Length: 194
Image (cartoon, rainbow, N blue to C red):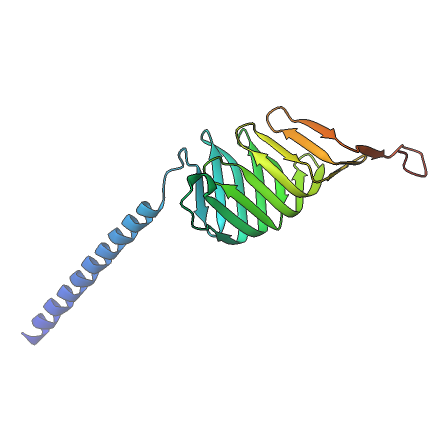
């Protein structure tokens, strides 16, 4: 009789543990599905200090930084996200990675989707060229990257410096103006020619 009671208590304990386990599992799955949003036509997502922006449903920027802040403002035109000490940045066109980005600070303007890249900015093209400046501006409406604070472009065969640069990301046309100097390597020459 005592043995039967112990078996019944053991069986009830096992059923209770199974029931609790199933309830916990269901709640965990529900919480995970609530936190996972579908990738839609988001303007931007903020994760683990990371900002991912989209343009017409296609990924445009993916920037991970040490810190991310959003100053308070009542003016919708001035709502911005500030990323500091960029760990990894990527600029996309047609869902294809075009440039790796490094900068001290990046400011993302929520309303216009424009971006300012500030301080020790380096844009490394997937094809190999690099652009360096202290300041670049991304104009989302016109899909172009520009600077008027001086730029240095390092290419396989040389280097170009200019005061101003305008890059149309869609057509990949780059326009340099203002004190443009191109230094290139001539094969067989001992020195670079200008």
